[in-house]
Length: 266
Image (cartoon, rainbow, N blue to C red; front, side, top):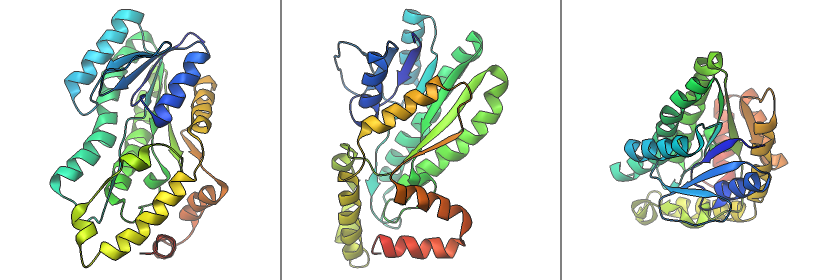
């Protein structure tokens, strides 16, 4: 209680649900959005996580007002659907820049603050797509695979400073992430990939829209913050998806590729 928490991408979805839950529990919550926002219980900052200077200004403001940052939740992210072959340089940069580089920018800004104050906690949002490469979401998976490796290394590097590091791997959730996904026009029009992409995208959207509520993930994040010894990884998903993560660890890689091709109708 009373901890100062920074949550990126707090205007909707996971970020909004988490910010509102923590604020209701008495935390001092700062949320970020790319646009001006007002909320009675949340301090909103205009921040573009892809812009190092924008992130630095936001972190400096929190320290000026509160004197510390106890927890950062790197939630800001987006998705681009399409084939890997057809992805444009602009699409790749947007996907990797938002999801991965954005996480790096925020960590690099808050870690000096946490080291000076003698501790803190970093919670990075990965995905089940960061555990297995999802067809037609390949660069989204790549961004989350990058977060997985980054977070593992970070946990080792900062433990001696009293900084706890965890990542959350959500499965399908019913949020506005689905509606905001940017889909590749080149893939949709492609004679090679178009029909397969359409089938896969229909399934992806159906599963997401019928997924879990973001409040479930918010509850998990609160649990992590309250834990004396939080784990490195937390899978938050339905039973089928939790089993798929376990399966990925124990079966040959080619088998997993076959399962994914069959499931996503590729």
